[in-house]
Length: 454
Image 1: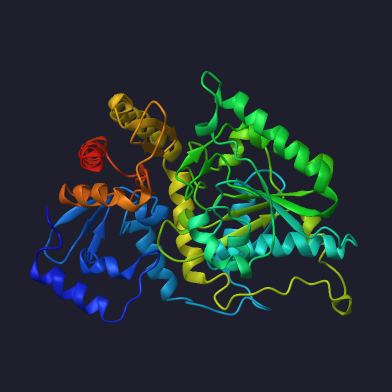
Image 2 (image 1 turned 180 degrees about the vertical axis):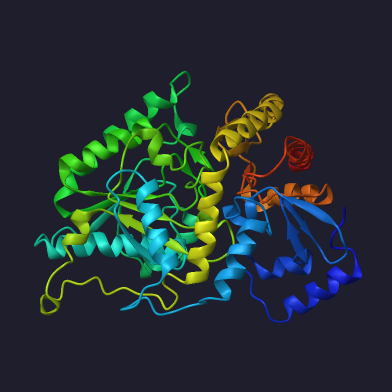
């Protein structure tokens, strides 16, 4: 398959480049590699304007859970469009928002009874940060204004979300605009000593967090983490013991815990929410991406009655949380989310995912012996391969060589969409992928790795 060589695709690409500015893209690259025009999607497959098909092995930036054009979600949206497309959520309400808030409170970790809707993942992070900060102001502890984040973390690209992230590629340019934060060493298992278990390393890193909190808890509003997988930070993974211990530390030091499950929620890690594997409930749970099954922008911040009550007072006390988005709680997005949650209730999704994850592990196992593969790691339906120039010393190739593009291009030729993160190629497919389709994905990944190291 060569989806960029046909006249129909090139015509759309040319029209695109006259006006569109694409995300996370150096637009000059499109002089050599035009954007791939997509005409339609069905299940795990995308199709261009010349009829070439390719498997969406990254779930279209990790949002698509049950495939493109899912008939049940489609039907729910058609019905909702005939009833109510949108209404202001300040002073008004509607059935999809109420039903979704109820269901999220029911299925998320215990105690998260209050739901605040926003438009996207970054907006959810902004809400959680502001809500935590404002909570302490309302409680008369105005000195608690700082946030602790992890090395290699990523929480979005609005200014507050960037500030609490730690991936230099996204953050450094905007440093003068960002609030200062405190950074703890990451517990990701890539950094563990030879022979050290992932759990032992996570607990060792927890001591660094303990020291940071002992020194700064008096001025800290919250700790923010991505549970189990630092996705944009090269799919680095860590043991749930870190989260268990972190919850205890935050309780001891009276600091909020914000769990950013925007990328890992809704079954990605093997449980419905990653926090479940640590047996914890955060003070704020941020959800987006898979929330609507990949259909429409929507995010939710779940929090506790205790947090809610700190804002509940007479208007003249000026304690209300005055944050809003025009499309907050959009009925169409909420209905898509409800249809997505229906699929979890009606089908054995997590059990199926676990079997698919085992198949992914079997297909990836031979890659561990590759002379340029330093690690194959997996957490549920997320599998990552770390590529290096020197396996013994774990040295990466020069990032300026942009070898990941070779994987992307080779995989497209073989009918698979992969989009490596620097030296890390990963597979994060929709849950409806078949074992045979996974075999095509891993054949393309294997060929892409060979192209990477040529």
